[in-house]
Length: 461
Ligand SMILES: NC(=O)c1ccc[n+]([C@@H]2O[C@H](COP(=O)([O-])OP(=O)(O)OC[C@H]3O[C@@H](n4cnc5c(N)ncnc54)[C@H](O)[C@@H]3O)[C@@H](O)[C@H]2O)c1
Image (cartoon, rainbow, N blue to C red; front, side):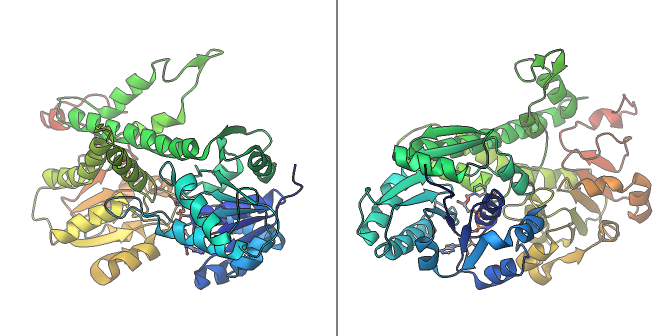
C-alpha cells in the first residue's frame, strides 16, 4: 500500500475543485492545474470561483495542502495519481472528447521524463471505452511508457451541484474502474479518508457505464413524472401531487422497516416540474443515446425521455399563456439557476423560459439568489435583472417560479399580492407552494384546474 499518496487534479471546475479541496481535507496533498488564470488566481486568494455551499470554508482550511499551478510538470512530478477532470460537452451529435484528449496528451508529454509509477484517473464523465481506448493509448504514445510505468483508472463522480461538498465528503459509493491490482491499491489509498463508504471495484468501461446508467435512470424518472403530470392536467379533478403520493406508498418503492416507512430520495424526482437541466443530465443522456446509436442498438427510450424533457419547458410556458387573461407583455422568471443552491445556469429551465419569452417578443425580468451574474453573462442587456424577487414581479403579467429556492417560501402570499399587478398570474413550476391555500392567481404544473372553474372547491392540501 502506498503511503499518503499525492494527487494532481487537471481542471478546477465544479468537479475538479471540489474533489481537490475535499481530498485535501482528508489529509492529502493536492496539486490543482487549470489553464484558466482567473480561476487559479481566485482560488489562490482562498475564494472559490463557483458558488457551492461550504467550499470557501474548506478551501481556506486546507490551503496548506492545496498547491495551485499552471505548471503540469511540477504537478505530475510530485503526484502519484493524476486526475483528469476537464469538461466533456455534447457537440450536438456526440460527446466531445477534445478536452480529454488534450489533457491525456499533455500528461503523456510531461511523463516522458518523469520517473516512477503513476496512475491516470479519469473523473470526467465519458462514454464506455474512453479510458482504455482513448486516454490510455494517448498517454502511452506521448510518454513512451508502458503499463509497467503507468496505470489507469476510471473514477466517475456523482456529486450534485448545490451540495457538492457534502456529496463528495459523504459519498454514496466510490466506483473504481481499474486496469490492475496495483492501481486498485493506490486508488484505495486516495480514498482512505472514506473508510465507511462502499467501494465498487470494476474495470474502466463498466465504471463509465455506471455513471451514464445512473444519470439516465434519474433523468428518466423526471421525464416519466412530467409525462404523467401532463396527463393529470387534462383529467378533471386530478392533482399529480396526490397521484405521486399514492404511488410512492407502495412498499416496493418506500419499504417499511421496523414499523417506519423509508422514503428513498428518488421520489423527490417523481413530481411535475419544468424538466431537468444542469451540466450533466441533458448532456449525459444525449451522449448515451448517441453511443447507443453508434453501436447499433435500436432502443428509443433515451431519445424519448430527452424529447419529453425538451417539450416540458415549452409546455410550462404555454400553461402560463393559457391561464393568463389579457394583453400579455411582461414575463418574470423567479429562478434562473438550474436548481437551488447553485449559480449554474447551464441548460437551466428558467433560462429556457426566459429565452422562449424573448423569442416571442415579450419583456423579460429575472431574479435569482445566486445565478444573476451568470444570467447577465448569458442574456446581456436583453432582460431586466433584480436582486429582490418582489421588485422583479411588479410589472409581470405571468410569473414563472422556475427554481425551488427555499427563500421563495419566505415570501407570503400577502406580500406577493401587494406587488402583483391586477390580473397577473403565477405558474408554480416546482410545486413550491403546494402546502399553501389555493389562490386563483397561482397555478401549479401537474394539476387539472378545470373543475375549480365549475365553482366547486374540493379540499386543498
Ligand atoms: N458539474 C457536475 O455536477 C458534474 C458531476 C459529475 C461529473 N461531472 C463531469 O465532470 C467533468 C467536469 O465537469 P465540470 O462541471 O467540473 O466542468 P467545468 O467546465 O466546470 O471545469 C472544467 C475545467 O477544466 C479546465 N481545463 C480544461 N482543459 C484543461 C487542460 N488541458 N488543462 C488544464 N485545465 C483544463 C477548464 O479551464 C475548467 O476550469 C465533466 O465530464 C462532467 O460531465 C460533472
